[in-house]
Image (tube, rainbow, N blue to C red; front, side, top):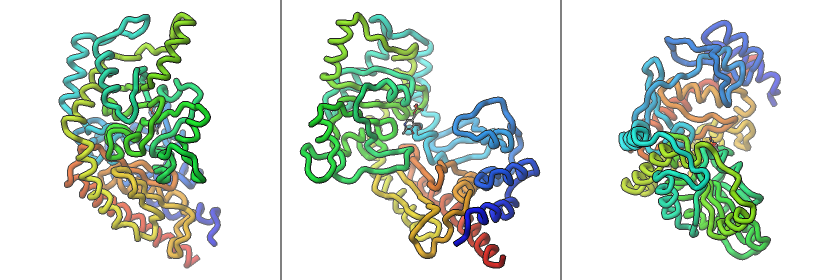
Length: 419
Ligand SMILES: Cc1ncc(COP(=O)(O)O)c(C=O)c1O
């Protein structure tokens, strides 16, 4: 068994050749796991290393030692960096630009609203038409269970943070690992020896919050995750694809029963003491309304269902790779490629090679694609508008990155044997 300590030092020496300069190399030695990710495996012209932003989900050493990937413009399924290099956006931004980039109708909706009324709030029984219209559309669009009202937030986090004591679940856990539920997990209304969450929460009179921040608007091949898993929630949280991420917006839909409780209490207390400056921000609501029109008019749920087999079959072809632990196909249009450090596959002795996942991510970038590298998993959730040809391109780039990573593993293993 190769010890982690040894593999750490192996990577320090072997992957170091991919690192562009001495400063980066020095920090790589200090942080073995970051080895592959520090390298931009292609040359960049502009340098923003050590920039002034405290960047989210970014370690200090990355900011100080590595040029960030600076995205400048976008079109459809692609983004372009400041050097003009083109990347397939295989994660749709952060699981959010479902309608792709540069959609003229969304730009027009934002522009028209900005020209008409750039801001007004929704406090004290004052509000705007886009906020009222969008609330109505959302209530009408969600059909898994009758919803009554919508409270607007700026983001998915705010929508979830705003919640009351209740049971909360994503129909499919997204960023947490792309984990679909077992078949009967949500569905059945009666309790048997299998855990059936909805029956349990109903029995104990607990509200059920469907956390639809990633799953809604077609990602799972249904308009909402609740439709796919027959969930009848009391509250629903939304964000991301709600406006296809053109403008920040989140929402909480609440059932008639929850509304009744809120009205009863607020009538007693004098007000509903909760709100944000941008609750029902008219520009965001106008863009979100237009997004919903585009989902419906373009029948994007059906499009996602049609294109998913191409996406999944293309990736299935990589299942036999010795460095792929698991490829999940059970969810239409969401993929998780897992590259576990521990695996029971005999031929898979790549586990514990630190930085391999990041090396794969860097190879994708080199070949013109951005994916999410999360520990030992690679995640992709392309925009719904992705074409068949673009899916083929995604798979081709994926294959190139996988091949390069396999080669790297071979190289490391043969060097290890010789030592
Ligand atoms: C599953 C999940 N929930 C919530 C969030 C946060 O959403 P927001 O950034 O809109 O607050 C994210 C962001 O990626 C997410 O992936």
